[in-house]
Image (tube, rainbow, N blue to C red; front, side, top):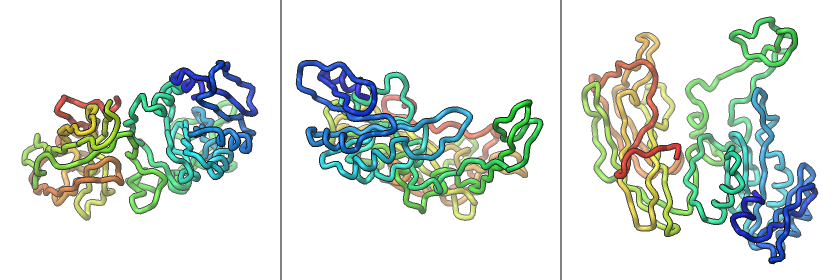
Length: 364
């Protein structure tokens, strides 16, 4: 991050801390001072440096590897970051780099948080571009940021004294000579996986959340249909208009999300993500029409008896918004008992959506 800021700002970046790394210094006055150390970060040194700054950037990450669980969901530097943020007297941005969900118990003390997940070899330059306003962020959380580890599926636990000679079909780890440790994994959440099981609980940051330098307004571009079109090939289309209200002249992009709740008594978790689309870049005052579609498959659940997807008749609730908890629009429609059929039993299709400019790639 320090190197990225230095390259972007084209000024001196001073690295002050316990670690061995020191960036080269230019004769010009420092534009950015980065204070950091490995696992023995000096809080007093960081706070002293912040007194000479207009904005502070505090970075943290987690140590992770394949084939093993993280020891906790905290940042490795959680203690240091928490103390620095508690003593901060200037705007302070937290940059977190993790492979997945993370606990941020000090989030309320940060002015802003940039969560990059694993951004690759250009991480530093990418973060610098966002922090300096050269890029307008438009990403959304693919996971919930919980308030505690109890809001997640806890790691599998080893069964003491149980060893096996074949790893086929079993969750195992370690052991020499072909032997491994047997792990007991209790998945009691059933269909209420991830955010689907947390709707009634406070969380750190909800699934689908993500801020931008641009604020967006939502409205129906067309009156939503009251009933699902009959026939196996039927599709229900929802037209939403998204407008950029405030933000940089260079524009920003929004990810419009569609959540669906099944009729009561279906046994399905409510508010399931069924579609999303990213808009083109919109400058303040500009707007675009977004089309979100629901197919018969989206209204179906798997029948073990029939070994096929079977549509659920009744009243459905559609909610559209910027995250699973920032919902701007809602509508209801009904599906008749013979309203549609889903003959394809290979599995659900990927969420899709379109804008006036064509198909939007949610991975962009």
